[in-house]
Length: 494
Image (cartoon, rainbow, N blue to C red; front, side, top):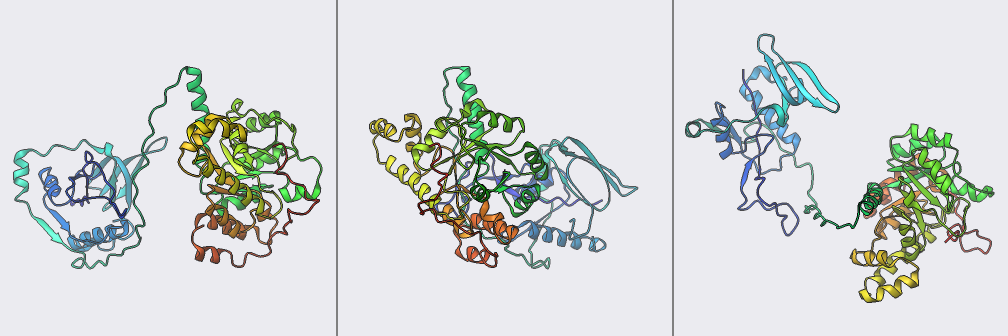
């Protein structure tokens, strides 16, 4: 029986990995290379280790081309075909062999030419029976590799290492990707001292909610009114949906009191999609928020789009396990909502208008205030906090973030109606975009939804923005926010 074991060398796990100054890769000069723990052997010198552990001979394929997975598969397939012409028609797809991955136990029945492979999967063990020859990849639990003894190391030096190259194997390597930039992982933050168990529990609860919101960064959240619209949003690439009985444009048109959505509709939307589902509660209506939490929505939006239940007080969001989203028009309003427990902030804009002007105004107000804040001395923060009516500890935290960001995720909302609108908000520094009426009040909702997702992903690429903006059908009819009789939702319950 012949066994082909692919091996690779990696930076030694004890060595500190350093990114090159030009961020094109990591420093490999004068860096110790050693065995990949999944391979247990590496190239050149470590092939000798493999030979000392019992292999009969080794081969070293020399190439300077980046080895993409497909390139590696082609090279291995060529080696197998070189070793035995009878196997040419069969490394997985290229050789048309059966395969078993992540093997934690392998039993070979040579007489029956079968392999019984036990592999670890979520929830238990899976046993596969496959014919030979086969491609089997192993898990670290398969065995405990033996140490190479000194006598075997000496013997290994006499065993042959065949040097091959891609050309000799008849393989043309492709460079299928372009490395744009290599960055070091974010440095771990230092520990935080707390005075009591109660303070620790409060920090864990609130920081966990903020962490959930962080997972939505760089995405699009879409307003939906039916399970079918929710499916369209998910298929288009939305990171979450907002369950509403009426999109903001219809709320404006129909008037009356706008309340929390029917729980049955929310349940139907939750069943229809796998992405997070948000729902709106009226400002100050903590019972609507309690109901939404009981429905196990993923986020609650305390929204000015619905008719406020309390024109003075907002919900105390610290009393809830579910994370909250809140709107703002300026830095003071944003920090007040965060102080109440909001895990995500969005610009209020003017929902249902298809007019992005107010979202732009509110975003510039927040980022401009943060730039001003960062010019202040620490002893000036008390007066500034009083002026914007925000807690001084949050003002200080925002200043020391060192960038034009809030302490929580900040999305744009209110009037975003086109891919260009979405890209505009992203280039202004927000973390993502809410879109509602702009999609489902347009001529082709599914196509516009996909285009807006692409625009948020590629917001700095004008060529892609131009491409995705083509042929979207009729946009929603916008509303001029400057007219005297315009009903501003953003001004509700400041």
